[in-house]
Image (cartoon, rainbow, N blue to C red):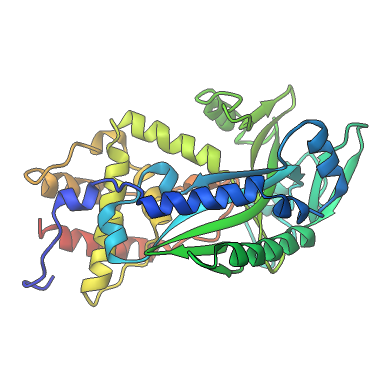
Length: 369
């Protein structure tokens, strides 16, 4: 690293950022618009059944929630100072559940495809469904969700034009204010149902023991009967009608468990590596292709005993040890949090070569401490 380059202190790197007041105000405006503005409710032409059902139950058909680094407290003030940062939110519509279409229309060969394909207990449909009161099922084309996303974007542009820049990107609605961008995904619910013959059933069942069956906000994580176990998540709909399945609540709980086991230092190490990589990328000719998600997953795989309290005296030693442990991670041992032990394949993977090369660069510059 350039000798004239001032390396940020450990404190700068790991200090958790507070949310600026202008962002809190913007989030409050968005929540009020989405949850209480009758015009937004009228955009929900998706299906009259959902509106009638929710009115009868006196329930708002829209839920808006945070996920990602904002919710997991892995953002930092330093990271937000040096580059545009984002806050992830998702808007879940009603009690719809997408059927498991995650394997539909795959072009590339997936070694797990044939094994996992038979584990789904319901059919494959390119739309959403929910159980009617009369026991029937209604199907909603995903194009209706994409249209709602476009219409909501236009409404937010009109409503927030004096304070924010609003843009409809493919995956999310981007609402930019100051140096932060709120990324709002439009989704339905997603349920992944595993038969008890699935080889990972007992593992997922063991994971379930760590969590409550029902969240305080009324959102289920798991349900179970004698023959199957269902995991509940979300299914994000993109403008080009793609489906992206995720389990944000489950992911948050995994991270909370990791933080609890490391006295909160897991998130501090995530903040350090996010900032350190960003600093290297901005100030040297070397580029590290690791996203915040990759960093979180890499560290999640590391034994809890390596997450020791950092300060200016011990940082070099502790960080060197954890990087060595990461470099000792074999390709077979590396897991992504979202995959739930290979159950769902994600698209954000990096090659094992890039992973190793990235860690070697980090190892070289950590000596600067």
